[in-house]
Amino acid sequence: MTIALQPSLDLVVGAGDGALVRIPAGRTLRIVDLHGNQAVDTLFYDAEDIGHRYSAFDTIREQRSVYLTTGSRLLSNRLEELAVITDDTCGRHDTIGGACSQESNVVRYGWHTRHQHACRQAFLKYGAAAGIGQRELGPNINFFMNVPVDSHGGLHFDDGLSGPGKHVDVTATRDLLALVSNCPQLNNPCNGWDPTSVRLRGDW
Amino acid sequence: MSRVHELPGGACFSLRLAAGQTLRMTSSSPDTNVTMQVFAADRLDRLNVPDTMKAQMSGCITAPMVLMSDRGCALLSVVESTLPAHDCLGGMSHDRHVDAFGLTSYARDRNGWRRSSYALLTLELAKHGLGEADLHAPVNWFSHVPVEEGSARLGAVRQGSAGERVTLRADLDVLVVLSTAIHPLADGPATGGVTLEVGVHDGPDPSAPWREESARSLEMSAWARAAVPA
Image (tube, rainbow over all chains, first blue to last red; front, side, top):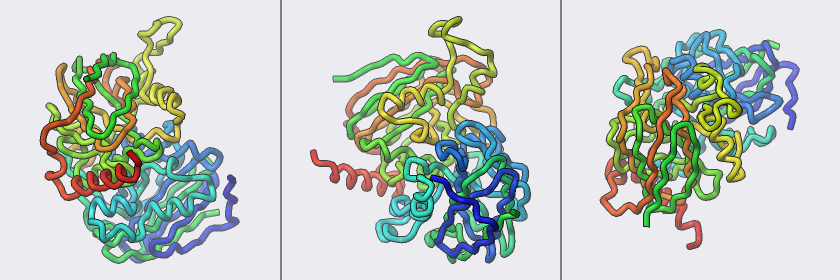
């Protein structure tokens, strides 16, 4: 299924909503954290082949760095470059923490959270138009999210480093699809306890 | 009755475990690395490394963590490990990592040819009707990639010695697919084998009382088991 390129892109994605956008090769998607401390869960796919997709652990291993920031190359499951982070006023972004799901909310917070909205719901909803389903969902990027890893192997979810108006620019190396969930998580500080809207702007 | 298989280095294997069965893996060499993929019985629900890490607040795999699926189920529990940590950040080796130590081929090297986990696992998955889309972030048993203090940079991979042991218990009926190709951060082409022994878990469960999250994931597995008619 082909997802058409929008002639121009300037989209405000509300809290808990998502989007599937096409980024042409050489062009840049800017994601703006309008109100601060808002995690933007994002996956990238080769627009011509959804089997060729972003791979978080290949990306961090090849660059030996757990965090993403300006200059980070976003690599695929075939070790090809899909995109580069070309500007970042936040400082660093997580790619090992994954996306929230209704089921992982149960595991982390208890059965009372089973029917709360979650990122995986938005990924499945917006991915469907491109044939992106359960099998095509792998570990994602959490733009503006702060997950420090310590040398003892511990993992912590901290308050974000982001603030109102901070942005990150992602420049596509090839025609890409970006699948975005503007995280609805209410049970930890990744959205400052109050999910808010973000803006997606294309430079084309 | 127990099943035992000697998996050599640089090879790939798959096996099914029924809920309650154990898989004991014993390394035969300091070079042993076992890159693992895990699927539930429907072959759709599968290991989710980020969820496994964040629910149990760990950047590596240790006993008695549970390995969680996309749907929150405990697939396998680490009931015992002689090593303090196993890697889950490094991903799997690709041809590029293997070829960096020199090209090999079947024509020249016969069964001594070297292949990557990506290549081997893709072939093994095909035997189960699965493919590249089903490859997921693995656990690399017997390998550990430390994260350097302050910088969050990945250090060099460290491996165990011969005779290290890990015992996993299946919490659902699972398909386990394993590759003994090199870890992608290995500094040489040497690989080591692993002895696989299937048994039955009959001791106390160290995972359920460990963390609330581990217990709830085991509870999710109980729900998933109940959904399948006996």
